[in-house]
Length: 196
Image: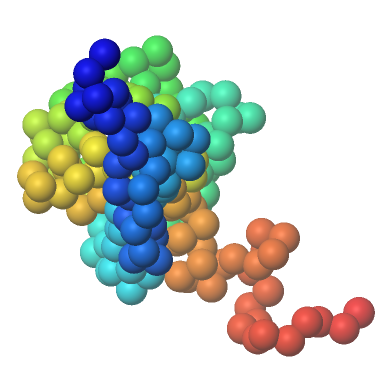
């Protein structure tokens, strides 16, 4: 093996750390892999998310489940009972969810929803983004635990507003005074602990 080839194989790459400092790391080192896996995409601010929720009139829940133990069922229940949104459930394997008609896909909905709320695994998000773009929706909201930066950047480049890794129920309740540590609306806004 020539010295040039050996140096090319073992020469470390320069890695820029989140704090702006740089260091030489082999690209296949565990630290380099960890740094490359760090989240760098930043979505809408709290004020912008509040605006999204206030402007919306309809929400489609992609990956909605008729199973009461699933989080999409709980979110659907909350949106139907605690908001004025028209809520659509998208699941090709269900006829009804929470007494409402379930649709096989976004293209089957009777209107273009203002928000497409997604309960699908991260690897499914690129296909969901394509479906959202195809129907002309403007906001895609991915629930807690769902993160796909490449899909988010692609969606943004096509004009979508993308929210990731946030629960629409929690955000709606938080902005509308209905969130407490235990999930109950206390009606009191304070930083002081309640004495019992």
